[in-house]
Image (cartoon, rainbow, N blue to C red; front, side):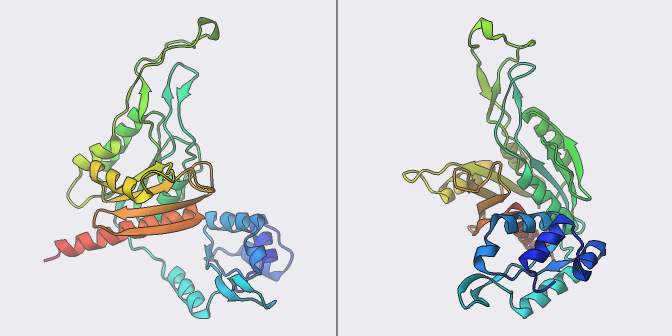
Length: 325
């Protein structure tokens, strides 16, 4: 669909059939490629962004508009992508990119909950959406994926889900699957500490503030790094809050990369607007053990997932090349 106007995109996302085009879009089972074109202010409107995100979640392929001169004479983002780029995108969809066929992967997602008593817990704001997006992208590209999750989101198509709650449960589930996996992606926000003792009954307010003694949770990523199989790719995530006076994001990522024994660290500043927890968008820095780094500016979590999986696929390809005689 090129050009795809804001009206047609909105109707398609809302499931409204008002003409032959929208009826065809809603009736077809074929892959759909949407090529937005509109004025910058329209392209940047939250309603359009939400509609595009909805279509992406449903498996619609979106060719991002270019920046340049628009129909009204002004200049900005929203110009229809170059015809050559549109043709290339359509060809890639029809070819069915399956570069990870035969690869097995385990992905963790969500924040763990460490109980204080039967009704209270130590947790965090992780929604699990980024981990789910990574699992969906791996599966879309042919991998056999197991998702170890603490959140109750709809499973991505073709992905097996193991439900857990605590860091201990996540460690056991991930280790069990990782023993035979080619790729491990630790996207979950695992609590660093948990109560040393869990009260057997609800702690009453009348008893006064309880003294909660904490102990470290298992370092799942470091354990996976130490026990990795030959050729296995391990990816860790690092949610940071970077202060202007402190170390930059890359320093944090490099430090974690070294201490955990991972191949890739996906770092983000969760204090930045629109980034990380409770958002549908993210902005990350992907740092590799080989010294490479890739910046993904603020985008949907599906776009970030595609960049992470691209980095994983590149590592797998290089590993295979080294193993060939």
